[in-house]
Structure formats: C-alpha cells, structure tokens
Length: 507
Image 1 (cartoon, rainbow, N blue to C red):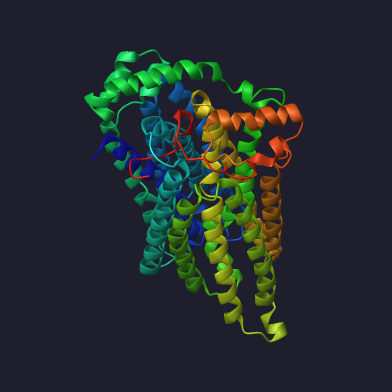
Image 2: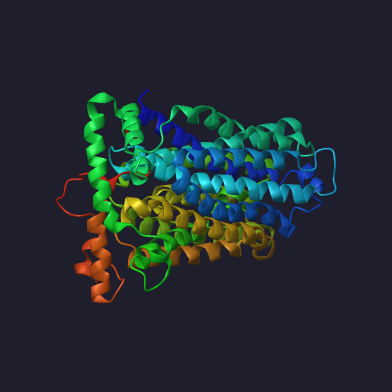
C-alpha cells in the first residue's frame, strides 16, 4: 500500500471516530442502569447536557490542536488528540463503576475530555491529509471518506443494539461495553501513526527543507521527490502573500471576513437541518411516530444502514452537480419531510381520538425520516467541511478548519441540548421547528453561498473581491451570478489550491 493510501485509510478511520460517538449515545440515553447510575430520569434535561457538553469540548479542542499542529507539527498534534480521546473514553467507562457519588461529574468530565480529543482530530486530520495527497476530484474524495463517519455511526449503534438485547437495559454492561469498544479507534490509530510521514508542507513552512525532502522521498520515492519539492517550494513562496491569521478572519473589516462567514453559516445551517437530533435521538423520534421501544431501535438501525448506502450518491454528484445546488435542494427536501412528519406525528399522538391505526402512520413517517436522512448525507454532510478548503489559501486552512470545527461544536451543542427538551415539551411540533430551520438554511445558502467547485483558490477569491467592489454578498448579483453554478465548459483541473480536504489515489 502506498503512503498516500495509508494516509487515506488513517484519515477515514479517524473520521469514523467521531461518527461512533453519535451512534454510541443513542441507546445509552435510554439504558435504565445508566440513568439510575447518573441519578436522572429519561426526560431530565441533564440527558441532553451530558450529550451536548462533548461538543463544547470539540470547539476548544479544535483551537488547541490547530495551534499545536502549526507550532509542533501535524503528527504530534494528532498523537496528542488521539491520546486525549482515549483518556476521555476511559473516564466515561469508569463513571459510576463501583461507586455512585460523583458518577455524573465523572461522565461529564469524560465527555468534555473526549470532545477535546475528537474536536482536535476533526481540525487537524483534514489539513494533514490534504497536505499529503494531491489527486482527484476533491468533493468526491471527501464524500467517499465521510462514509467512514457513517460506518462509525453504524458500528456504535449495532454494538449498542446487540448488547442491549443480549443483556437487557437494566444491565450496566449494556451501556459500558459500547463505550469501551470505542477504544479500538484511538488505539488502532496510535499504533499506526508511526508509519506516516510528517507533512512536507509543514516542514517547508518552518524552513526545514532537508526534512521536507526526506518526507517527500518516503511518500513519492526518489523519482518524483525532487520535482515535488520544487513545486512545494514555489507554492510556498507564492502562498506567502496569502498568509493570514485569525484577526484577518473574524472582524467585519478584515479581508477574509466574508469567506469566514460562509464557513460559519455553513456549519450553523448544517446544525439547523436537525440531523444532529436524528443521529443522537433516533429511537425517540421513531417512538414518537407510534413504534414500540424495540421496534424503534431496529428501525433506527435500518435508517443508519440506508444512510450509509445513500451517501454513495453524494460522491457521484458533488463534483458533477456542485456543492451549492445539493445543499439548497437538500435543505428544501428535508423541510418537506419534516412538514409531513409534523402532520404524521400529530396523527400518531391522537390516533385513538380520530380512530386511525398507528401502524400506517408510523411506516409513512419512517419512510420520510429515511428520506430526510439520505438527503442530509447527499446535500450537507461533507459540503460544509469541503468549502473552507476551497476559499482559504493553504497557509490558513488550519485556521479555517479550526473555525469550522468550533462553530460545528457550538451549534451541535445547542441542538443536542435542546432537542430532548423540545421532544418533552413540543412533542411532534419539534418537527415543524426543524422544517422552518431547514427552509432558512436552504434560503441562506441559495442567497449567499457561492459555488466553489471546480475553481481554484484564486478564482474563488475573485468572487469575494467582486462582492466587495459591488457592495453585495448576494450570489445572484455578484459578477452577473456566475457563481450560482459550476463553471461552464471548463475541465476540472486540480491546482495546488484545489487539493481535496481528504483524498487518495483512488479518489
């Protein structure tokens, strides 16, 4: 296996790590022994708080890992993040093991520490992977590798479902086993990381040319290393003029504020699609549609399996149709699904009153939720992580990636915190809330998010320069609406600034 493919495999496994957590907490939240150990009821707001503090840890971890990755190297930062993830996972596992006082405190601490590690991985891994790979359609590559995220989700839920059925929801090992099984990811990655080279781009940025050349020989062999080295040196000299920091990104008057807002709103809008609620609270949603507890859990597993296979359409379409159109259509499609689910949820709750059988309502609602989940995977899962790599120069992708993870963490903290509260108080009307937020996400993306696919960094920067000159951020008004769609009659040539977030030889 080539070094580039090893990097792809490593990156895919790392992405699966954060998918695992989403599937892991779904059934833990309904385990009776877990709730008793934590001293909470199933409808207690603390259920959502325990889930959501993880995302705050992710936001902080992204900043720390990005700083460490820039100063000490990508590999040391990844190693530290994996070690922290393993420690956080162990803290969760031992919460309340042989004792009861302080169990919730230990669980909350474990969730935060796990978030620090996983958030750091999410910030550094994309940068590291893009710096070591130079092939193929970047959108397709990322969408393919994000199927690993869904694989992690499926793995966690399947383990959860198996031990819950085998041991029962009153057994503590039914929730502890899925937690400790997560260790396979950091342990496997930590044992493999020594095989990977440090980023040649990072070496060159820190004026360690000899180390950069050695890394290139390890990646490409003696035949191509000299040419690659010259290319990277030239690219570094050209990119030095684009070098920016956080202060150039977060203030309204700063030169990169507009692309930063595209990145920020992409993550906020992804959270507003409501998929964070579906991934963590899937069984509860199907129970709301009239299914029994066990039925809801198996149907949720089916939804995740369907999600995995439907993700294939994402990498088939993302570089052919574009990021923007998939996001807009995806958001509007999900909104329609949630509107229908609002009606079906109301009918299911009042089925006795209207004399309507619950089963047809539940089946129809299940189909709608399957469709909504698939639309999210095709339209939203990978796009918001891809776009920042297409609108920031490579010298600032670490900062762009960190900002993306920070907003992702904060937004998902809010969604996972308030979703159980919403279910307990709004019931099926929560579907209507998600329908409205999806309409907003679709509208905002249509109005303000440019199509960045099949364009170089310089070409995408032209959009922001023209927007500033014309005094508008509306995509339809900037440069006669040229960025509403992919560039016409242009081959998808991949330049230095067009490298995929995560890519490999098979992309």
